[in-house]
Length: 310
Image (cartoon, rainbow, N blue to C red; front, side, top):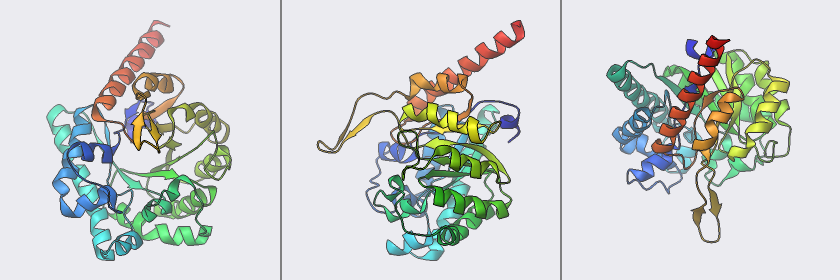
């Protein structure tokens, strides 16, 4: 991705499942949005197109929760899981090529690699409390990493990683894969979910070949400052990726979201502080990404004008 190497700010997409639900799909089963990769792939393509139309430059594939073990637990087969991984890249690529043909703006496809806990469909990715060793996690991730790489995305989005063990396992495998990737953790109060330091995770990524960026996703927008600080400490010079949740709060008693989205008003600050890939995760809609894209463009134009004036 030459644009990133040149210092360009790139807008990511938002909450993919959020958009699929807005399009009328029930995603309450354990396979989540991955089910549509087999049952209704044209809707996957359409959701990618919605975010591209809003200004996103990267489509993150619907492969986050796809694994052979997860599909088998849901009554599907390992072969169907491999097909879903392949299909996720195909649908994102078609949407990217179609958008690029329409306006000439380059788009990319990021193959989503979610954590082990995501495939358990019980919230484990927000605890990082699985009992697998580094070697076991590496072996578990290996087939899906290779299947996604074989489908030829532009980059792998290794995302929502909760623990230092899983960062270590993934980076060990990625080091042998030869595929560019970014790795984003899901922090809470400035640390990894088990309480481990962010800088330790970013240091592992920094020493891995083909790393494109480090950062965080699926977290409170207020986590940006500790993420940026840890990245400067352990991975100085490597671009920062940040795509948090909308900023709304889930009320578990009333079972509804409360508050207002804060992402649209904060994205320009992240860019001004050095973030180079920005977008959203849960509850972030195409309309919010449209606002993010506009604010990023405005911030970049102001910075360019100031630089030229100097």
